[in-house]
Image (tube, rainbow over all chains, first blue to last red; front, side, top):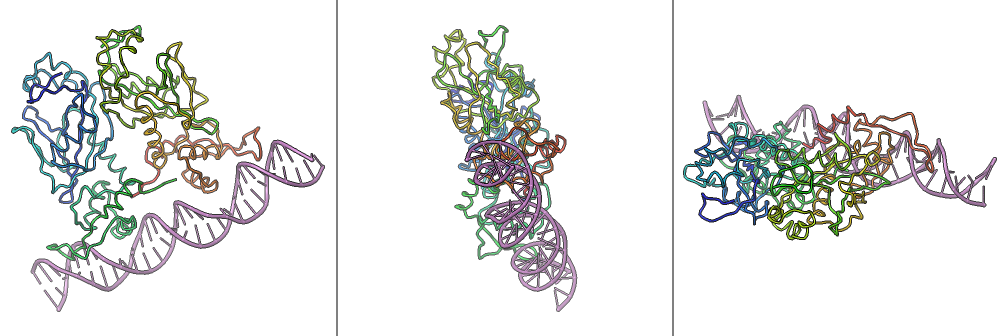
Length: 251
Length: 251
DNA sequence: AGTACATTGCGTCATAATAACACATTAAGC
DNA sequence: GCTTAATGTGTTATTATGACGCAATGTACT
């Protein structure tokens, strides 16, 4: 297998790809980074093929780096999708021709692909979405307003969100999605958005502070309507500790 | 790609396999079903390749059916393993020769395989481990006494156990691992074995009964030392409901 | 037969976590 | 200055949890 569209000669793992669900948080909305190529009429998740000499986890890190410019951020494999019909009629000859891939070379592209799904949590404001080609569109989209996606990417996205929702009960979330300084109401909005559920202000504060991962700053948010909320930062050391050991022990 | 060892002509998905971690519970031990082929000196997880016209989830169901004779049991995908070096030097020429696979045909076998891990929970006593060839060994092994495994199968097994351990906090477990009628101490031993932790008898009873998935029978276990414990069954309907909705809502 | 012993069944109590709610405080805008 | 819509802090009742005590049961041994 040979990639004819890139400069470097790259041999790919046959029948395998990765897809990344990159979450950001802005304007009290949970956003997802989506891509639209000119030869496609639908949007898709950022992803790619896996060179035969690259670990699949590294491939996810690479895609994330390319698309967001960021490294060392929260990234987790959550599921692998391998239905026989998942990419039926997707890499047809029209697409192959557009990508300038010889039909014989691209034969494996027309067969079933198995894709490994990863989800990432990034700081919206620090991220500069990178297009890989001029004609390509890459945008943050509110997760409630995701347009039609190619293949089974909607299913992948849904599964990522469900996974994230479940993870909220096991690990702290926020460090990767919020700016360095943030307010409790902002953090609560994040939780409410992910859970798609209203939470009680006062109970949320108590529960979140009891975890012991927040530092209350001697500073208030400025230029806001109504009472100015206090600013907080995460105590990275304690945050990582809880991230490692989990929130609830259950049994 | 062509399988030369089976009767039927089967074309496989290149560079892909699945592996199943099949858990059983017997003699107060958590057991894992392992396989040893004569041309290998180590044990391995039951698994296999995926025909190009088979969903990967179906492949896992098929392997499980072949190995245990059972269907409709608890089976869950938990992770995909794709390090570049994970099957280095495994399908070397010696193995290819043994499997009577032409070296040219088997070329893709010597390259990196990505494997999708599934774990299953089965009733030990209802399971009859099936060997696929005469010379093959298939045995239940105490998870604490697992011998050296091929490739990264130890890593896969460990990850499955960690996943199962985490799932204990989210879903009820036991229906698939215990016989129809069981005692609370047996169920507790199961939990303790999975968690590798001692639990308080009385608190366990209270917590497990509060879930509301148990039916207390008017029957006691016979032929046991000391006081005969009461027998229980799972209330399948309520069990499935909790399985679907989860145990703790967290937020 | 009687007793020791290990295990089960049921209960108590102090403490912690949770849900529901009241009220004072702050800053913007009229 | 008053209204409004947020935030910050506290209260209470209920429920869940962790750490125990003690009686009941059935086996094994003398």
